[in-house]
Length: 88
Image 1 (cartoon, rainbow, N blue to C red):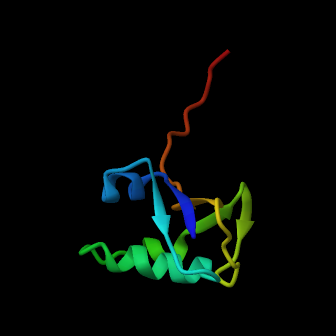
Image 2 (cartoon, rainbow, N blue to C red; image 1 turned 45 degrees about the vertical axis):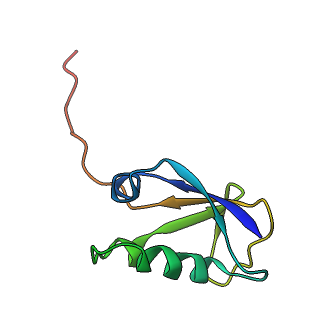
Image 3 (cartoon, rainbow, N blue to C red; image 1 turned 135 degrees about the vertical axis):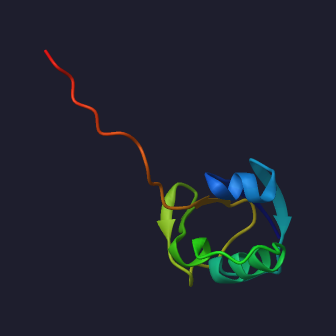
């Protein structure tokens, strides 16, 4: 089956892609997809433990079974920004 993976944040830089279609075996889970992707990277990172995953725009757990045509968004944690005060 084929799913479309969307990369955000540091994963977009790590894979040098915004999105890609991936072929997976029938009945593959989010956990299996993440294991496959993790194995494709030489860089060991804590990002894989803190990653949020959305399947078809709904947050999904590791045990979520993927289906043909699913859109899987990989959302690493976001940090940073600036706290500035507006003076009126």
